[in-house]
Amino acid sequence: MTQKHHRGALTGLSAHSANIEKKQRSSAVWKLSVNRSGLKWVRYFLDFEAKYGATGAKGDRVDPFIAKLASKGQSQSLCRQARKAVRIYLG
Image (tube, rainbow, N blue to C red):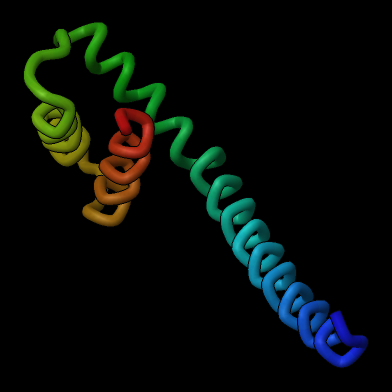
């Protein structure tokens, strides 16, 4: 490998490493936000299922929980947040 080719490979590697680092940072920020607010929604969901029973497929289990949150006066924004957190938990 020539020195010129080697430098080009290193430059490409640096750019790739920077992209990976950027994705890891954004992923870490996202995980932190999910852990702070999303974890509470997952706990509420698990309590809801323990009280009312878990029936249906994964997706079908989320809707009754969200309906219950809405009936308790939770905003649409918080219901969307709860839905996202529970769907992540359920996979």
